[in-house]
Length: 253
Image (cartoon, rainbow, N blue to C red; front, side, top):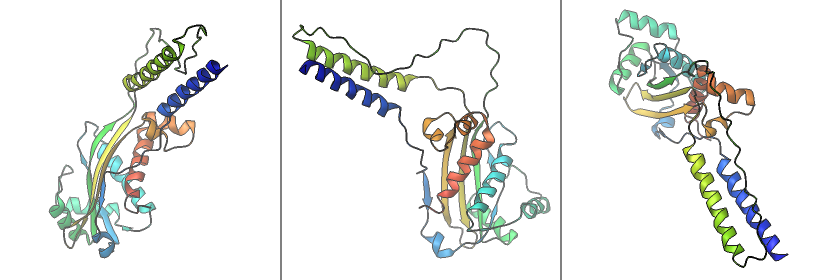
């Protein structure tokens, strides 16, 4: 009887380890800096300048700039300068659309626009969901990994240590399997962004991160199955989520 209870406890323990390995928490952006001067300066009127495109996707910078402007507007702490005014300045000054900013040049552009602060940045990754070719080969369905059930000969005096050893091997094998499991195809977006005080040239805020739609912690940020699938295949939806989370670091809870 004691042997059966011990067996049940060990199997339950193995199952809890398995569940813990596959349970993930929603991703939280930590790679950001918010200067104490941000609240002191009380920047209100800002302009979101064209983003630098470091990817092979031609439309990446425009997509990210538009979405970032939308998310900045939604938090309700800034007055956004109209995009038309920014485009007019680009034509007046004959600026290249690939113009690269630093804090000094961004502040100078901000003064021309009559803004108190400017946001500029770069798109570091922009990989849409790959269009997979039709594959007529048979795919092997992945076997679900669950807790192992082991039948033990109760007459074996070494059953206890053998059981512990086998369960330990099962748990270690599970962890290795999850770590080495190949990543499925997925959309991916990366953004680096800064907010500069036009008057002083100080960087008041900066943040950067990248989201891969198939990543479990990113999937945990949305609620429904449909949204999780969209994160993998819809790069616009993934971009929107990343911009939303980056902007949220401007007003941390």
